[in-house]
Image (cartoon, rainbow, N blue to C red; front, side, top):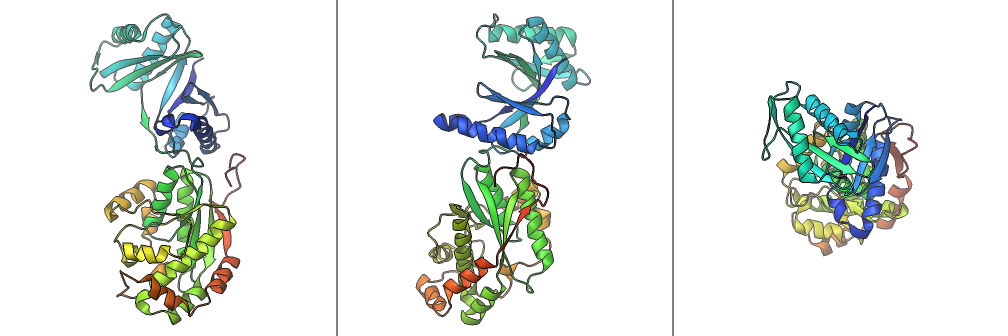
Length: 400
């Protein structure tokens, strides 16, 4: 009986030198988590490759789940053959037959002989396999430049792995390999994309949302929970910290000039987020800022806002324009949720003439009339956390 598996390839991880094993171990853990709904699946690692062994589980489900795992550059369904030329030829013909249902098209053969004890060299095996496939399927032809199928054959110590399809992976680094960060998650388009981008670089994210009832509705909060759940498709479940922001926002609105209100509000958000992150031993904040997109995202505004925190603030979207961000939002499935017409706290009390070049000393002066420490402490003490998606934790969900 043939062993059907999925070959996992990774690109950036391969240059990580002494850290490579740590990255591979994290990727292995993430793959097992993503395939946790397929209980018979097993994973193995060998010579810079990883294999997912299906053991009778549904291949299509496994392939779809793997598309969301960061750290994978590409993957392929493979069939294992014995270290025997006749068996290799049989598996190669079976693979070609599955790939070309009408038995028409072009192909090339690429043999990689990792096992140097195998008696036939790579170039010679290319010819042997190509000739055998052409004899069995005379309607096929060879095209070494732009083939319809590349028949890849890896000859290893434990057997020979044959595949005829390569599927693009999500790329990047495995989530969990680059530390943890707290994402400031609004209900808009940008912040979920920022969270996705941070995760692609290996960051495990938690999220914080500032909720201002009755000015923001429960439906607005549910929208944010849905966005957090969408991000969880690319990693572990997301812990969402829900900050009651109404009291602080009203005090800011009453005390601060309208055109500086958004700057002061965002400074308070960073103070609160930094406090929550420190309590969770999180080392950085993530925002959806895109340079010049709105008044609070000019360099002058970001300088004034950043002045209240010593924690690194990551801005993955800083040089992207709105169309690029919207395109990514559509690809990851957050766009349609983000455009639902439920306002978040950033859209209330916002002056039409908000300052684009606020002076940090003036902003500090306006804040001097507020009891900053008490306001931050009150908001943090009343913050609630939920895990999303809201489901029973899997035995593999051990990132928290």
